[in-house]
Length: 245
Image (cartoon, rainbow, N blue to C red):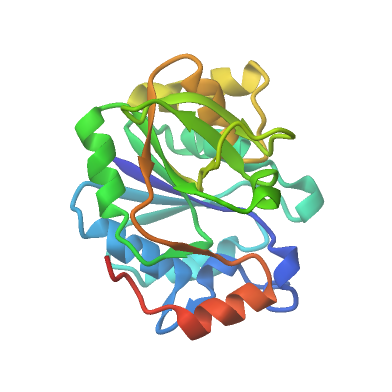
């Protein structure tokens, strides 16, 4: 299994911190955000390669960081240099697949979240089902539902429907940016793009895929800290205690 980390955004809401530095490499406690994620995932022993897809502006920072890691990390530069010319998450996934000839099961995650639970639980959940999977968490706040990927699920966790940023949400189950693609799903990303699935939000491809094959949604076993602006970054630096569950 490969782990693909999405890190091609420009984090404009975190300026000036991220004007010339990538958000995933900001420190939270004694580690970067990416180190928290990779160090945890690698403990499961199920991932045999890591890929960070980023933009041309930040690629040198990621190359320098990757050179100091004990696991192999391939940094893929998508060639963009501004927020206005970014490819979008799904196109970045396809770009990485093409660049490295990826043909394997794949864990796809956003590189700008920290978690208080181990992602190893999700990796094992997906491996047990041998199907593409996502996570879900209950969101009570109605306005936030309009800004998220929303999923309906059956009793066995199978996705019934999924929609990014719906005008009329069908449930209170939101999807954080953590996905497991089977090898077959990796091979179908190009078809999804050609069929018109959205490409900006990473969940758009899973929404398309779940209408064609069974995809399952594990209930998130803890909390995530989404670092979207300076205030949320300050808060996570003050409150985060590491992986506790």
